[in-house]
Image (cartoon, rainbow, N blue to C red; front, side, top):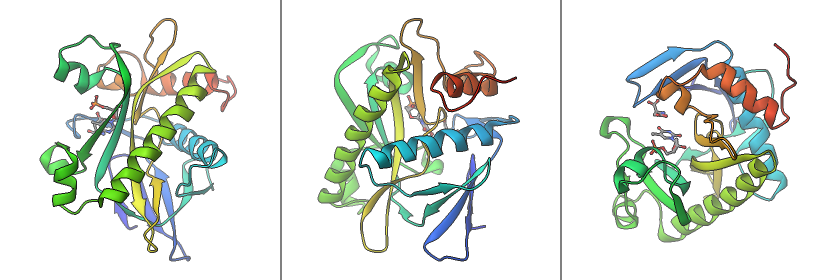
Length: 235
Ligand code: TMP
Ligand code: ASP
């Protein structure tokens, strides 16, 4: 094992350029303050992530995904993760709704990008471009690429979800760098890292159900997977 995070474990493989990602059944919120073990969560998030990375590859967004190998695991290209949480927001929710004093669901006139320093000890504080350059987290050209890719992912995922009567409110991406210096989309894309609402009722179909004790997480993620057609509706 190379690394264990709150929701995933990363292992080396017999190929130095490939890692194995295993999704755990643990759910955390508020920087690990709230936590629980939820049977089936690992399987569901591996399913979502594998599906979305494949979809994005087909649409021309290069990423680290190298194939699902079991219910809870997929392979990925080894990259060094740039310690930035790249958040894109279409409507205000969560910390943005609080910061600007608007109701959740307040529409933004264009997608808002926020960059946070991926550092649990500091509570993932928001950084501006100058902080990022001063700390050498990314060069101006790399940050430009990251922002452009994040906005393209937003358009593609928004279209996909709208096709299923769902609205992509916001999401978080992470990027990594290969040894050749190529920037690749990495980490995960799942209801842990996105806010997804029913476009008509506004029902929340993401980790906010866990953060705010609104509904059971596994059932919610399962119903989202059925809704977007990646899981059959079985008990
Ligand atoms: P926020 O409103 O709490 O700042 O979250 C914005 C988006 O980022 C939301 O879709 C959830 C996602 N997110 C993560 O993926 N990981 C995190 O650690 C946090 C705080 C948010
Ligand atoms: N991922 C963070 C945590 O585990 C925060 C969140 O998603 O709300 O605490």
